[in-house]
Image (cartoon, rainbow over all chains, first blue to last red; front, side, top):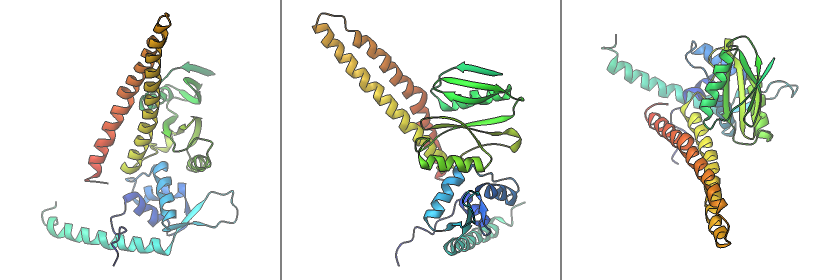
Length: 109
Length: 183
């Protein structure tokens, strides 16, 4: 099997962008959505998000949602490959959480 | 009423601080051309300003796409010079940062450092040229004016190095160290 470079952790920004795009959204919507999901903890800078979306498009994890008229704000949506990456990330996070809780859980107040 | 201020910054973060101090006082930047700031009176603290160095000149299609994206995100494009752009957003919309993760911040600092290095080296070469051209002038029996002028270039070179390049390098190094343990 070829060595995969795709199995590392997603950045917090990318993870939340992908989650947001389970329904089509434009850039500003993603920013608002991420803020809401994280209860205000994660505020994505527009520059950071623009770069992240560019990379996700390139990797085929998201695609532009073909809207009726071009003059409207550009919307994006997650692809099948993107969904797989998110599922993989969720199992990875579960493992981290399980181990963390198992070892620290007892002493955590 | 408009206010014009002539001022030159080498450190873009100092410049950004200055614009935000002015905005806090009720003077909001509306236009910038080289070393010339035009402010307009607004309610105190209405805007937060951010300065960014783009990858491409402002007229470039990539930059235009980016600026459009920013405007769609509720960020106002105020002015630009070459690859530098001035953005602002209403302070009421909350904290305003363009880059919020270490990778994108590091990339931004690297762009600024490269551009500054380019500017510094041009000054260094012009300085060296003028310095030696002075010897040529002396051989013609005239004072080495160009050698004296070269002092200006060498000074600019040193200032860019001390004010921009070294602090930027320090920031990049510390961000990269931080990045090795957290995102």
